[in-house]
Image 1 (cartoon, rainbow, N blue to C red):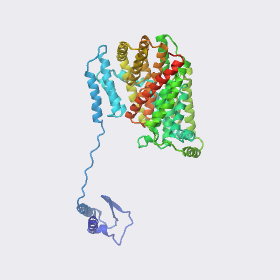
Image 2: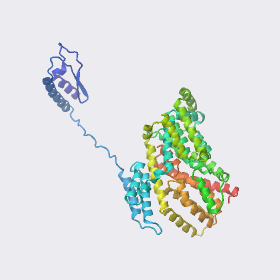
Image 3: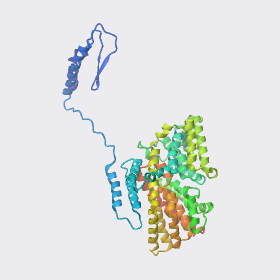
Image 4: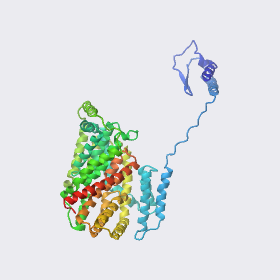
Length: 555
């Protein structure tokens, strides 16, 4: 009230603001002067001496401002807050640096080269940084590459060799496909179709995606292509249609559970078929060269079908219990989805182009072996169609920050992991394990169990299933055979686990960066549930699977 009285008194001290001239009013628009949050209007008059009157008014306005400040006693003007720190988070950064420094200066084990040990220090420091995230993932990985070049541990060409690997680019292109899938409205159309059929419950919706992906697995040998080109766009569209979006607090509504479920089951469907993952034929080739036995397509499928189907049923259910979506059932969803489909009308020209491009790309993924066209080449051809037709623009591709960030950190980890192998660290590790397990004097079953666990969980050091298989498969199979494990049985188990171990991290298999990049699940939870589901899969495949393999005469 005191402020109001003082403000009224202050107005009365400025006659030219208090009253308008009653005569000679010129129709010129008013001129406004802002003061704090109030606006004061001065009518321009033909007899108004601008230079004199303006100076006089400015003085009076200054007095007015002082009066207002004095009348609002107790009110203080807060200084502008200091800009927030936008650099690295200090504690996570120190943890990452400490990991690298401690290992760097630790004694180098006998049989390990200095370069290999230093690269291991940088690699582990980078992994700690990726987990704790003092900076975005791409920035952490780039710092790791920079340090490896600065310390002469890797040459520049070696450090950035991962950018020449096709898998990170295939994943990057998958995000561009997802952009077109959603932008054209095709994603919504397909999502509403799925919801109309299975959308009365989130669990039913999840199972429909899980078994759809499993049906495609034997036909599309690239898990990156299946995840990125087909199911990532579909998952994102479904989540958006159900009101679950990354970054706005609605992740747990559906997106977190659905993306994690689709990822974890993608490694299971990859393990079920010889053509389920690009690296699976490598397991068959190494088996042939090691024990002179052939793993056929039917041999693989027959051994994997029972534990695989059980895993596909149980893993989504377990995640639904321990990491549930908040949207569990929606009885009206199918009806609403059908109404949405009707309101969308017929497909637009861009939707038709997007559909044709997807069919072309998927067709090349299926028959690429016959046509001698690999997965990434097919993706480039599909992207070219989208760019030329204008369905997706290059500016939109450049705006897909997650795609470029994923390309950066995944390529960096691939390069580091590849050179850990080239520098002999993986061979040294394999030989050390062999000597240790062989010297325990255990039965072949227990010895093989230890080998399996070491083989499986050493995948934390690999950003590629093919790299892991190439580095360790032969050595572990040879040791297992020497300790009494039935050779063909050992080869089959190691082959299955070479897929399942991809579920441990967000970089362990081609589908991992795809689904993690959707940004529905925090990294710590991704790793935590990855470890938990790995235990579930091991119990199913070695427990129930062991019984099944005994029944079909595998051991």
